Length: 179
Image (cartoon, rainbow, N blue to C red; front, side):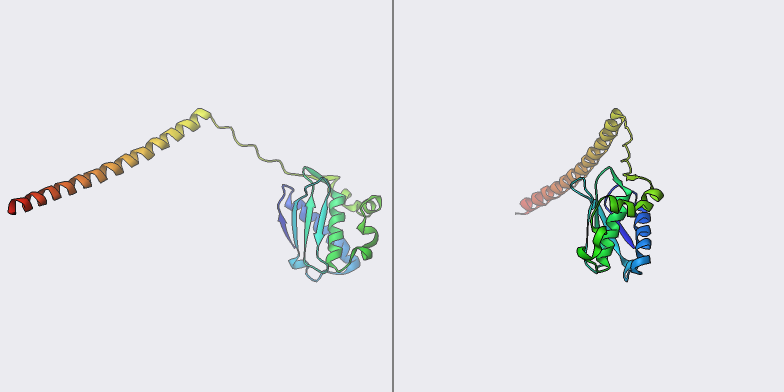
């Protein structure tokens, strides 16, 4: 199984929930034909609800989670639901697992017991505070170095052009003297 995690939720936690959900489902449905190459793409939803999408008899699913925190039993229920699609079931055949609610929460109580009530996003690391004057000093030093390099290049080109001008002055003087 592969997880493409585009959220700040812990991939390790998501993998644990997805794998345990699959193991429990495989007891009743049997092993999935493509579990070793099954791909979950985890993204954020635009609303506060969790949702998912999986092809009938497919080998991939998209799981959309709300931001900040999401209840574990909902994630397990959603993965269970999408895996049933990949086993070939349509909504009519899924039955009670299709509907979210108290019955579905009770059937996925194991997830809450094992992983806790909810999973939370990892916090963004706060950028280290930098001294503004130190930063500006470094920018100034690099600017001086850049302009000194440009000055040296300009002086070298100017020296070559003066040398070339002297050559042509002598060549023209010699040619005028001969004529």
